[in-house]
Length: 392
Image 1 (spheres, rainbow, N blue to C red):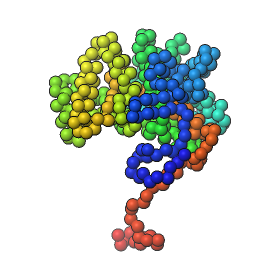
Image 2 (tube, rainbow, N blue to C red; image 1 turned 45 degrees about the horizontal axis):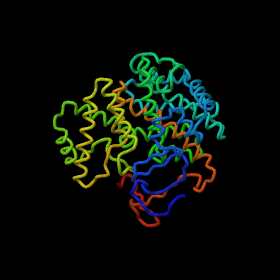
Image 3 (cartoon, rainbow, N blue to C red; image 1 turned 180 degrees about the vertical axis):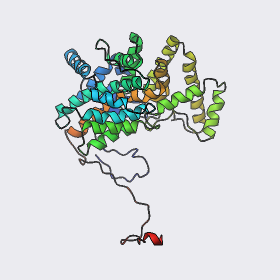
């Protein structure tokens, strides 16, 4: 339910704009819940397909429901030929997030349910988007490398098939499971910037693809999904640095940031970062990149020390801080890291879009329309005097 408290210039922090049953965050205690389930339990025990089903449908699937859901995802993996043709005419230096955002409306044009506003039709569109976002990301990477996109391999899991189509080799079972877990961890996060963008757009009764395209645009920003690539750039720049403590101190003294540290909601360590930290240690051993994980540990250690000294103990690692080195260890290119975020978060976006469109008890206006306080020029009720161009 919307609040009437005047909290201008706060980025809507603390302002409740709608109800949701999809996810919950306790920022003080570092708790994240999807549909009632703690993220730690889902990361340990559930596949991304189970989590995507949970987010969209509100309950964990039984075996038959999961097999049907996975089957529909696999059927939808193939991209229409005209979309592949569209990718081939994009500038090869185009950023993958821009290409991804541009491609989603192309998919909308041939979706058979695009003009059907029933809940069932929206669920079918969600299935296609969950299936095709990874296909778009991998196809674009191949095309810009001068290679043909690879066909999906229906013997592989969702995560394993993405790695196959992206890198051209079938991943080991453990690495595929690790990526699947990363997708679980990124699946939803309440009313973050991209999710709110999705919901705001579809509150106008725009279709699901329009909402998802808006979400991708929001996710591309360096303060949201783009932060993982920024973290990786920092780590690569620090590979030869011997005084990490000094680097952190100097960076903060100069007014800079430690990318991947701090969060708009969490006042303790992001629960997803804890899990990725352990994964990074194991992958570092397996891939011979222990130095990268050790560098992350050092950056976290000295960052926490400096923030405590500066009276900011709540600034701690978030999900981007450790997902970046994890993806790098998997062989994923730096600029593909944020698109991977999108291919996970699309499940949450679609769940929120469906909730926005079909909430059981809609206690807010149908259309988001916040108010702004005008602080520009004001010349009274008659307005400022318009002068002819010759007199200006």
